[in-house]
Length: 351
Ligand code: PHE
Image (cartoon, rainbow, N blue to C red; front, top):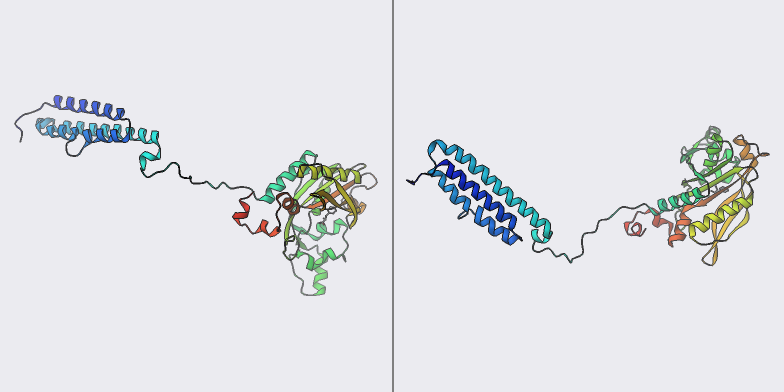
């Protein structure tokens, strides 16, 4: 037991001076090694300065001990805080190297895999954009459709092969011919086989002039191969106004193809047949040295205009329906439609 006593004032003074010089030393450290030296000097468990001042606590007179202890703790904390902030400063300055001496800043970093839109979605957005610039407003329709909008209103007669149960995904299966006929008269539901349904849905609700574009999924029970898939996407365009002709259709298709492919693309039309257009055409565009099938189109059949309450004597229109996969594939030189729907990231990452 030391015979020498130390007043509480002296003890506090010693601690304050210690806190002062430790803080200065930590702040002055230029690198982790210097900081560590200062740490050993002030906070070292054996010969650190804090330890030796602490030893003097025994010399403080008994009644002042508690005060001395509290002061000691406060100073210990403030020195520790000063050390930690110096440490944070140095680690921040020198990056991970200070934290981990084995860190090699020249090694390739960790890549963040940023998500992206599916190539079909990208194509849809772009096509919508192009048609938007031509004045066509986007419109949507349900994927679960009824017989009326998928066929009847589009002038597709009962006996037409396009309505065959084997050509469509009907949502109810008839067990007999009688049941089949009954269901048919009840306007059965099916997954829409074409986006032309949206023509009807829009015209039912809008008076001419109409200028819409609809992009979405359609379903047909086709066996999947490089160019077929039971689900695919179509872009449907419809323009109804006074004096709309095939010339307007051809101009729009030409501008559309040229915008999408980024070059002046010639477009040709060939005679064809669809129940809901008269005349009907197949359109092709010339790309990469050959004529490529664009899709079906034509002048909206007067029967269709009548079914939505338009007067075919006053207005006329054109409509077209194109396969979106085909457009996407030609742009990106994709050779098999199935790549688009198997969700292989090695494929999807390329877009
Ligand atoms: N709906 C037709 C199809 O799926 C394409 C088409 C649309 C034809 C509009 C004419 C007019 O094949």
